[in-house]
Image (cartoon, rainbow, N blue to C red):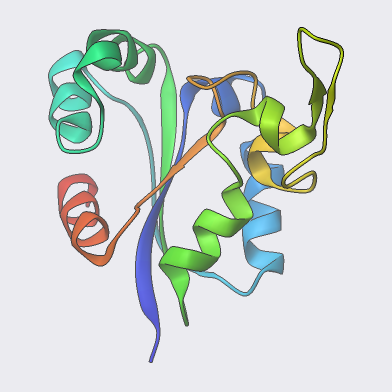
Length: 146
């Protein structure tokens, strides 16, 4: 039976004009977009959204970032949606997803070179998109947004 998850395209992704390409990739991977919402989160809304998932050290930075521009939320559905979307997203650090040379000159192999974050992410914060990390988180985030 199909599972549902939330994909949130972050302000860096939306501002760069990449949202359409990301949505096309999502469709290519067999997801149905059940609902879509594009809006600008206020700081209070961003804080409430991030409360359960963001470590306190970066919380205020992340709140400001999420509130810095428009986001696009997609309610995705398919078999194994939560895991499939997180796999398509790739690692939280786009550099790790793409591969890089570390400060000692060692080449780090790409972990997910064709992932959303490898292709459109800038850094650990502006990493293009968010994905619910569990059924509980998916339910909570979907209710919050829609």
